[in-house]
Amino acid sequence: MSFNENLFHQIKVEGRSTDALFTVPKQYTNLSYLSTGAQGIVVKAYDTVAQEQVAIKKIIHPFLTTMTARRTYREFVLLTTMKHPNIIMLKNAFTPHQSLEDFDDIYVVMELMNYNLSQDLKPSNIVVNDKCILKILDFGLARKIETGE
Image (tube, rainbow, N blue to C red; front, top):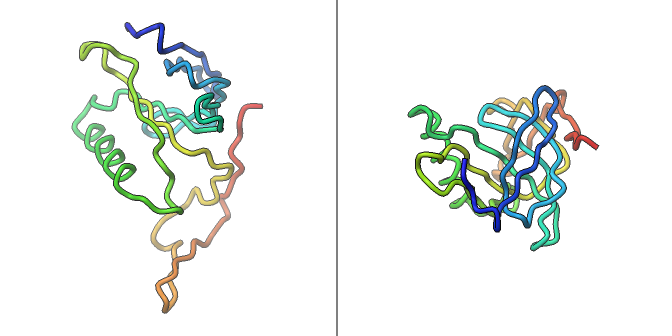
């Protein structure tokens, strides 16, 4: 893989079951593992430009199948169009790849949250009152996000 070494650096992140190599702009430092999901790996990082902690999701092989391409596209459309204080905010998105032949990963930078309050979020765990105020219930699977520290 080729990338611009003046703009990007590679950082090995030790995960729970596997290690991952992140190629990120040099403004992102102090990467530490947070979680692994269906689409990729999420780390905590420090953004030296914005001077704040962020979450970086590495989407691995986003265009491998039609289904993964659709999921990736859907996530980008939703994150870029939905603006609400209760929806995670997209801060940046990038790929370090310089050619289509190498294009294999997409990185999504989002605001960092400290807790995953519902690992069982589904329609039956969301209730609404007569004033259309939504509330989330059933926190039996709630977990503090581990930072690897």
